[in-house]
Length: 353
Image (cartoon, rainbow, N blue to C red; front, side, top):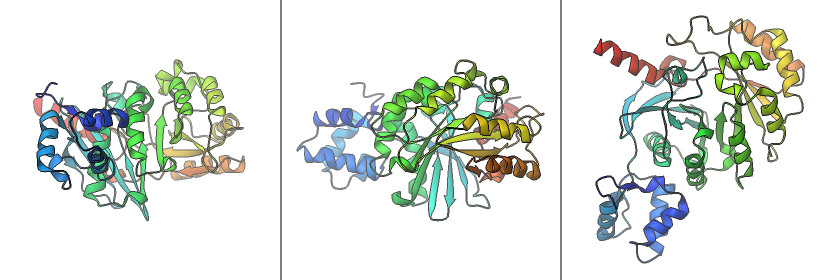
């Protein structure tokens, strides 16, 4: 075992964790105690495991780590209570997560990759290009750090993988992360958002327990969708819709169709009609997302006026579509995907210049 770069136990799938611990932990019930400290309490130091003998904690520390990414910046809480976190990873990469209180519920938005290869032209993360997959420990570290800092009861937590990266291009690590989160949070309170990676959606459909699925559509026709989401040339809109129609949805749960509204591009009355037609027959709801403007993105991309947003939504509703509007919690803290990292990188470039 390489003790200079020890394995993070949070990176192991639960069956592998039990196997690894079984080699040095005795008696066997101690394994369950360690799992409780990790998976339910989310500790990041062996010394925090107070009912584990000191000698055993020392032996664990000699062989393994349970470290989380380090927080390097926290924004001042927004007027709605939202707060954004910037984490640094062991290799120097930086990722974001967002804390979003919502009455008696709290949502935490997590990143799944350090960067994103999908390249959506309206996304700041895509602007900065591809990065690497995050390990389960790096994803769980975002969650537990925020949950601890705000002392949020597990029963009131929602988790959304809508931060940096494409979760379904990090499938195996995502599944391990979900399996840990399921110890405390029901699958119906966890959402995985994808740009429409069809093979990943099909693999997700095979899982015995599935999170909610959210799919970015963002245009009602293939041409415009491929203009602003280049990766979708590999996963055409027609094939994506066919895949979603086969996706198993539990009772009371629906697929979320995410639709970023860009002024003058995809927000017209005819666009709403086309979207209603496209989603007909899907067990789904549309989440209309007014665009968050950013200086790193193309200047033509603008947020629609409130009247345009209302007309778009009204057209969908009149055509039998269930709609919600994401009123951009945390706009004053750059809470959109990649924006805090974008500010950090821009500041770093300016300093070097």
